[in-house]
Image (cartoon, rainbow, N blue to C red; front, top):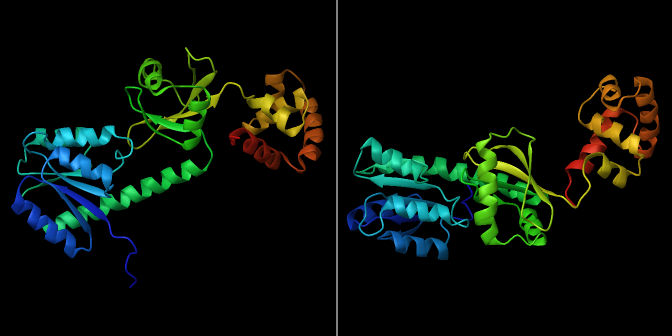
Amino acid sequence: MKANSKSDIVLVVDDSPDALSLIHDTLEAANMDVLVALEGKQALTIAKRIRPDIILLDAIMPHMDGFETCMALKADPSLASIPVIFMTGLSDTNDIVRGLEAGGVDYLTKPIQPNELIARMRVHLSNARLSNNAQSALDSMGQHLLTATTTGQIAWATPQTHALLAKARVSQEWQNTELALQIRVWLAHEPEVGHVLTLEGLDYPLALKMMGVTEQKEFLFKLEDGDKPTGPARLKLELSLTDRESEVLHWIANGKTNREIAEILEMSPRTVNKHLEQIFPKLGVENRTSAAGVALRVLTTDH
């Protein structure tokens, strides 16, 4: 069996030398690279310098405890996605809840059982890899996507989103205050998927479209460029269609039948069909399914 080209890096944070020694030996035996910190601030410094794949964190430590350390990790965008497993001698339910609320993914009670520790870690390392792969895929899709917390703070965004925010001269301070407030107020009204929030207070027109909620309970938005044509206008521009043809194609892409399109655009189904007869050769397709596919590619691709 071929060995992994890269060992998992684990940061263990505990103020007990005996606990550190046991965990260190267990992890090394499992072919993991181990980093050690004796308290919270030291852990943050190490994590920023050498980003670990997973963190084992003692809940009860002097100065900066595990809960505070975990919240600091989650507040740093470059470290926020690292899974944190809490370790503590306390089995009190309140401490378990507090650890999970601080951002932990799991909780182990001391004394740590080596086999259980490794098994739990494997699960969370696997989950983190799947999540990172999905995020990398979104990053490379060229989409203006971002996620925000219930407080309105941006938790993650694709490079394209950062580029559009920079183009619109949206400062970090504006994101943390004005944008967060507008998102928070909007979320209070429980917007449905597809609803759009036009951002106020900017010289450049931007809007957020609600796309759904992630497994991390963050809200997924698409950032829309108000300077770009959308819907039928975009189809007309990019596919060289007439106004009516672009409107018909737009509704075809939205899954509407000829009869429904006729009602929406106040024309006869026969007229809709005539427009389609003009649209197909312009797009180089033979049926409405293919035409819808062309339209969707235009409408969902960010240039």
